[in-house]
Length: 224
Image (cartoon, rainbow, N blue to C red):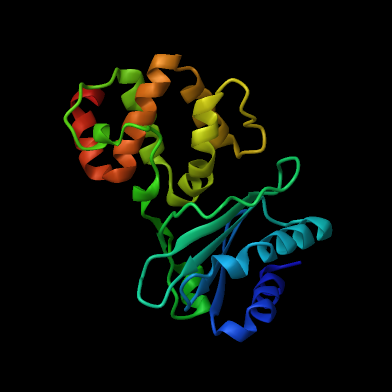
């Protein structure tokens, strides 16, 4: 099963609602964009699971699959599902928004266009006041963990983001073996933080997701 097969599956299933389907491969990661209609989640729930099962039964050539949706009046795309085929079992992520800019004009343009994530929908602390108020500088180990996330490309960030919340809840039990070596290294180095530092890391990563440039400016004095 290849990207064209996946595109045709989506086109057949969604033929009656007038959407455009695009696929894009980035290394071992397949992106599918469903664009042109609002409120697509009801159409994709269940069907995405069927597609995932079909891919898995056929033997997936990709490590991960991300399904994005885009409405009529927006240039931002929202993540509807993210699947890691290397993990035991298949879990379709519920539609927590993760906007991304994906070039639409043609498949050839989409193949060459980078995906630029808008991280602002992600938050890893319940106290959202900490995202906008001035707070104390974090320890250097926390600042370095945020900086290492900042240094990742958008494709790797897209793989990490759905995993960060469960990772922070149980870092020592979280299975990192299904991820690429660079991401395993990120998990391992972040796992070395103690509980207090991990909580602080969740706050500062949330600040970063809200405004990456401002967060990195705030961390500059700690990073040196």
